[in-house]
Length: 212
Image 1 (cartoon, rainbow, N blue to C red):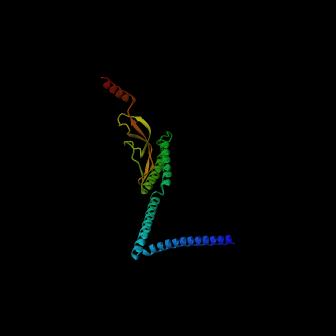
Image 2 (cartoon, helix red, strand yellow; image 1 turned 90 degrees about the horizontal axis):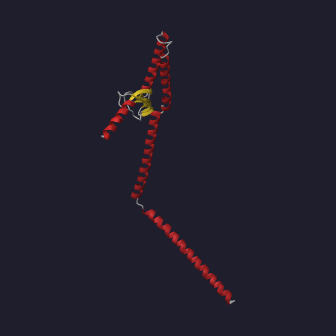
Image 3 (cartoon, helix red, strand yellow; image 1 turned 180 degrees about the vertical axis):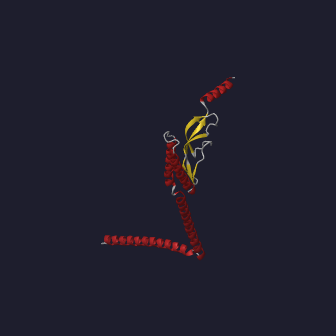
């Protein structure tokens, strides 16, 4: 009997201890929440206004960045939207020039009225195409007698020519064009180089001067 009473007393003490710990934990949680509420309540009206002003400034800055991106994209679409079409249209000029060259070199047609009239029509159409290109700020690259510029010219061959400085463009194989400030198509060109005979003499002269 005494043993049972002791066990009951121990169980009551354990339950009381657990309840006490639980109450302490709850009190700590309540104190933490109360402190957070107090910190929130500590914000003055001026602080709240400053906080709102900061949020508004960030929002306006993001809106301005989006507006600028939209403007840039719109300008690019307006200015260069016809880039692909213009590039394809260059083949028309190429074909006209090839056809003109073939007709002019045909011995049977040389000097005939038919050839003359055909070439006149070709010239009219060619001028119309170039005029349309100019209205859309598409310009032909000036190549002949210029120094090779890798941004606008692509060298396809070297041609021996002692009258020109090496690297000077002396032949245009295919015309190049720009659209506004962008390259539409580079010029395919031939550039001058010194003749082998002169280059050999130069090397011999250099070699002789070094051996003396």
